[in-house]
Length: 326
Ligand SMILES: [Zn+2]
Image (cartoon, rainbow, N blue to C red):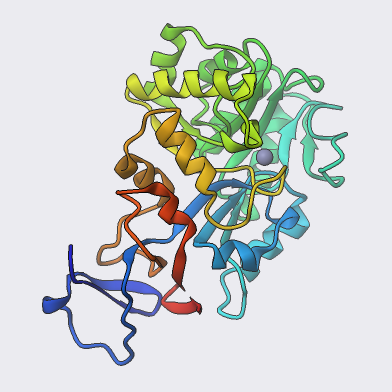
């Protein structure tokens, strides 16, 4: 649309469409650029990043996938206030894991980032506790390369308890056969494109029907074409060809990911996985700009559908109807 207008009230979009038909607004800002919903990053560790820089870079909502409960749920609550300088934070809380499993002894993870479960009952109780504290998803560690992982019965108990509360389950699957285990247990999402093994076609087709994948390719690349990136991109390309849904996520905080929109992640999805610029934009946003959607939007200095690197040229950021940048 050549002349578009978005009107917001109380943090919610009340009109999105041609400017000629837009209702009058009390306050008005004109932007010469490409208007789109702000970006949502579905895999971050926000305490290892600068929330203000994340928001100024065009990301207005993030989902934190592993941090100690006391700290992250308090921060998630604080992020709803208009005084908070940063994106809206939704959190999984700690990652459920086996005794001594990942990430309990990782240098990046403070004590409490992993919640050790012993048995199916304890697994289900842990889910109930996190749900009561406001978890947006339940994260499970199936990292067999860094230690023990929850058993199949524990994993199934987690999935059942989470689904009973309407919560999705996302897993860190690493090591041979771990994606297959997630699939078998009814897990909803892979928190990373699988990079530690080439998944068989039949498995990719099954995953595409029941799970979505959070991309996190750039964290594997570190600016280079690594073997991990090659495997992950191959799995993701076949997953998409089988009809699977890819959403944008970066693992921000856990490596050299820049705050804000990670242009390299978008370019990898386009150039390596073969997504069109329009498909990449759809993966980057949580919802389209329409009546009733959150008034989280950005303007870019040029059209990313022509060149995706325009995503690095954010010139306006609005969160919950408030102009936060410039
Ligand atoms: Zn992570």
